[in-house]
Length: 197
Ligand SMILES: Cc1cc2nc3c(=O)[nH]c(=O)nc-3n(C[C@H](O)[C@H](O)[C@H](O)COP(=O)(O)O)c2cc1C
Image (cartoon, helix red, strand yellow):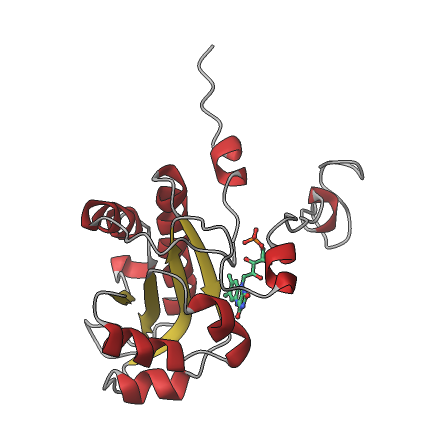
């Protein structure tokens, strides 16, 4: 029987600190953004925006690195691609606030991550950045909000990283059990018993 489960491929995704300096091929970048493009969204608004740079443009790349908190700069500076993920917060059709903009953008990113994994790429998202620096640095107005940043590339050997960061890459981060977040009828009643993994 054909195994059509996505759980195996989804489980291969994780967020490394070590990136190889090897550039990411433009076709692969197109393929991950194509995957994002296919995400569903409220009223089909497609409120996500992705703006990226790579190390072929060191000045822009340096500016993106400066959007980040120091803790993220320490490793993200070695990634070949840095992406700013933004959401357009008002509907284009009527200018009204779109309270689903962040949710929809997250779904587009989830698609992008799945495709990146399929392409042999790794991504590490970052909430640790200064949204105001992004807005000023990219000349954005209040119609868009920075949602997250992402380092993207091939997995590296950790050269340049502290031992602590290299060690962190050796262990996968745990996941909650279904019994902790899937309930039936009312909160707190595990839908599938206590032992689901
Ligand atoms: C919105 C968001 C913000 C995050 N911010 C950071 C960050 O600032 N720095 C960091 O090292 N990792 C960050 N992460 C990565 C998470 O810590 C990581 O995805 C989570 O621990 C699960 O690990 P995994 O992606 O390896 O499965 C962020 C992830 C998301 C989705």
